[in-house]
Length: 172
Image 1 (cartoon, rainbow, N blue to C red):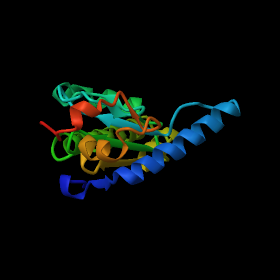
Image 2: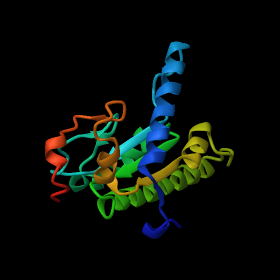
Image 3: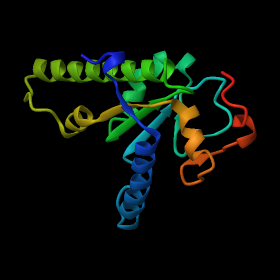
């Protein structure tokens, strides 16, 4: 069972490499007439500190309202190969959200398996379930604070960046 201590962390450098590679792959798939959907989802759980920029393509789900969203979030992200959670520092809100997401994903898969068994269906997982089982979930090490120190001004990777808000450090 996954715990806060065993959650996998991803460095800003590793995430930037994943994002850039995914941007290229997504563009190539779209050019070939395939899906233009990225394989990575970045979930930013900052609340009122969601200012001064964000990772390009990140979706903001404020932690204060996220609790009831996990079943929906698992369904929304079930086709993603990688899901990365973060908050400002990725010390509390980001890891907590990642853990709750993983547990909801496990609960959903167990429910689907029980429903299939009760209906007499094959126990073999569907393609969607296999993809969800293989999904990697990470927490961005050092959160957006660490990210913006390196990639804040890189427009390929960061949107809405306001250098003035970050020049004196994190105020959280």
